[in-house]
Length: 267
Image 1 (cartoon, rainbow, N blue to C red):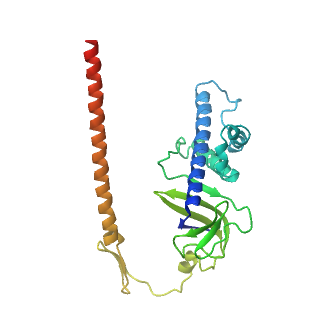
Image 2: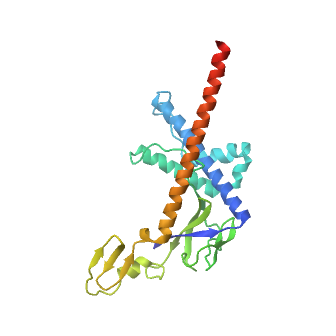
């Protein structure tokens, strides 16, 4: 059975730069594909293109354009692997297919500030995506250290993986083919436990839940760590809001001064 696992990694400076550059290329190609199909779709809506004319380009066709034309003009596209580039275009095509079928809205561009661009690393060689206790082998990046231990299944077969960059931190997600009775299958452990007498559960506010057998599950939202993080977040949001209002006010003063100068000059 296939199961997904995710954990934080601690890449070297060189590996971090390679990941960030590759994610940048992936975002650029995703947006290029969206922009191209958006133009074709608008031309079709205006009647410039009819049903017989090609008003949608597939990921496979756009990938050929990238390899034969765009990559020649922009050689830095090679900073991202060919299979990773193809995967990004396939995801973009899937977004359009969902739009055409009415399952979602029109695909949007991916901004640099957004954190939803992931980098796909295919398994090319036998040693790729090998997992050890403290590190794993990622294609093109080689061995990358894990920041957290015990979250990835050691010695299991990885079929594919992605690397993401969120708020200055790097994460790896892997899809692993594991046996149903494997110790890494937590669902199996909880589903096939011995049948015992029932228990009563009391959901509360201070504590998340109190079980009749005496177990108490704490409410993490009431913990000092979470409260401290929420307090810090509110403080930073207030600081950001004040800066925004200051810039807005300063920009308004500059615009007014400029308008007054023009008014005086032409009066």
